[in-house]
Image (tube, rainbow, N blue to C red; front, side, top):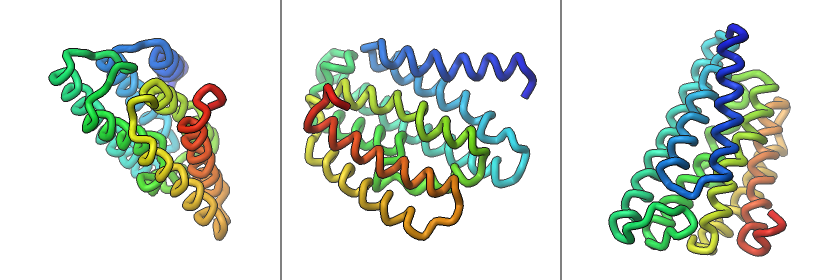
Length: 201
């Protein structure tokens, strides 16, 4: 990747995440998530190796599927409540779909299986970005909507993430896969904190 492309991609990733933390409109949130996903794909596939291409494809498909589900849920909520505000999403089906989509985006169990494979297929620095910075946006959206979401669903996912992250890392010899399972477990802990003490998370 040439320096100009690298600058544009890095700026896109940084700005899209920052804008998600400050916007309250679902369409703006969705657009920022898509920019974020599209900016990550060339970084993941940068090593020019078949495994990196496979990792980028898996990442893109998972993230796009989650974004599509989120857009569908936000539109359903808007049709029923005439409202596009993230913190005023009250439609039960919409909030459930949004929660599931966010779980898929941040690789919380049971939608966690893509993360170890993608982490193993790319560089350590890219893995580090995926496991840290890329989880900020979905967590912020979950934090914004947590009052209207199904607490039981989030807690179940949190407990499952902690368990799967812990068990998955036991027999790992690959550093990046170990980091991925550790990230899944930590995501579970943060989700559990959101349900009980949102201000701490």
